[in-house]
Image (cartoon, rainbow, N blue to C red):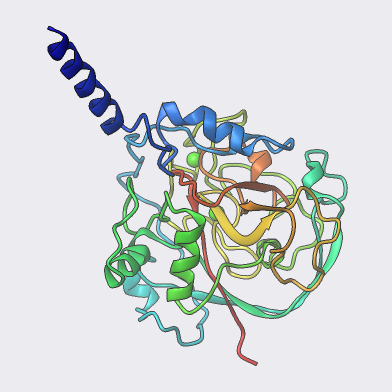
Length: 328
Ligand SMILES: [Ca+2]
Ligand SMILES: [Ca+2]
């Protein structure tokens, strides 16, 4: 009898360990059980965890039956180590199109008169950025698939169509992709400079107000996807489904959050003024995300808006785009 009881206990312990209860949680933070930990990990300023999607991994993507035509980029880019197709046949699915971003100076951070600014967006400060290249769109599922295939990596889970932005990528995935593509992640300053598109003093890349005609985002109050007007998508939209900004970049507001190279700092005191990534000090375990997503309310799509999360986290509203230095 005692032997039988002991056997049952041992089997129970083994099954408990196999169930994962005795090991740290995997980076994937999509299950309901993982939400509290993920939320705790990101709460430290008024930029709340509402920016992250807790949608179940199985949530179907809303791909309209008659998708809006994708604007075709027209500017040419420098040769890339990643084979490129023409815009006409790529549909943005597997190529990386690069836009040349001219150098210049801008005011980074909280836009004057913007009552929605968080303390982390202050102080506003001048930054001078050298010219560089930046992907016109978020990196697509198709492009990431090519990277995964070339490097023997498995695709992250729960992807939509090949011309949608890749999601469920952590910071290291993003950096590895950009390195493979001959580039790097943009610095936070480069990202904001690029997002503003040469337009100073606006809350959004196109002006001071926002509607679903300009970007893919969610409900006005936190947090859920919403289809309305030109924004036909409850989840991600095909990249380039909305108008480009002044630098020819798409979806700098909304669709998916975009990883940048910088470590998280609670504000801009002591930040570099030369456009370089701020990688010293601050919270080295977290990296910055920009631009808001399909899951978020419009406040988080503001061009100065910031968020951050642990480098190993993946969500179905996290993506990225790459930058690269301009040739001298
Ligand atoms: Ca939407
Ligand atoms: Ca975006």
